[in-house]
Image 1 (cartoon, rainbow, N blue to C red):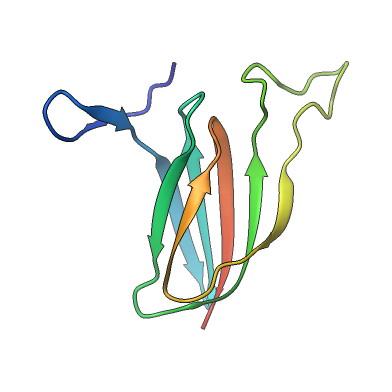
Image 2 (image 1 turned 180 degrees about the horizontal axis):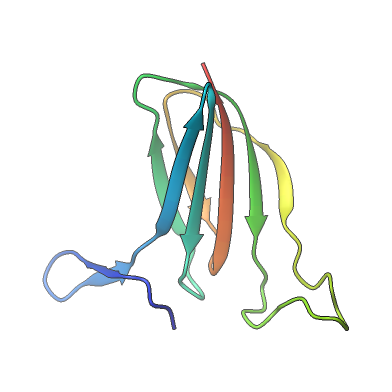
Length: 109
């Protein structure tokens, strides 16, 4: 269960909302998004108005086990995974894993 806002669409339909933030410093855009749904991935569309992505790296913190956590006995049960992402142009879609935190670091042109 999550405290995320349920967003309604249509008659008696709703879906879990995404929570996120964005920051821009010179030509570096960082978008951080949380998908609070415990079992369903979500697709987010990113539109870079007035800019294009030249390169992108993604960092994801997620686990197949919703109860996974780091503690003294197992300090590396959850670790962020960072890798290059193949995004180009002024808009793209990104699939957010269930129960995840995703950080997109985008170099802009």
